[in-house]
Length: 182
Image (cartoon, rainbow, N blue to C red; front, top):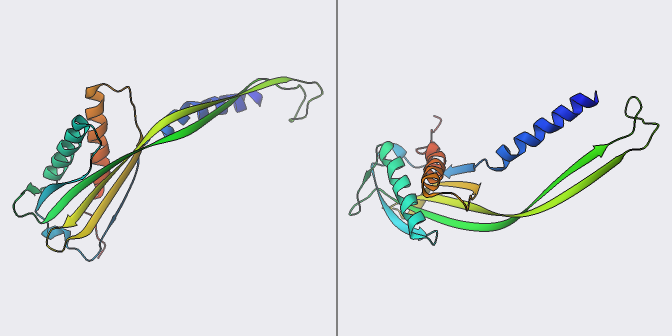
């Protein structure tokens, strides 16, 4: 019984880091817009990351995803403007774990004492938010918004940053154009 509980606890702890690093995405859109009529876009300046290298990676990833969806870049006369916004927040993460041995006896009730130690660790992490807005150029109104939130790996090498940014943009734009139920 105790061995099963221990194995289950170890499995939960092993899966916790995977959940902590998962990117959360959401999207919303104007249901009155005919997305099939959108064929071209232009990138406009939003809220940059503050690092020209990251901003270039983001712009390249957005252009790549929109091109893969069949949109053409047209800076002179686009159907939509695409704007991205980046923000970074510092968060505190608390991790606690208990080690030691409990009492002995059956069914959770022990006759003897035991020793346990609980340790707490506070980590400061950076959490990045990427918002991609798509606005109608003719109506000057927002028609689609995608948001992604993820912990930032500050120690990542350039290749890993490229991969992370491309994955984030792909995941955010996964639901563009939206599938409208008829």
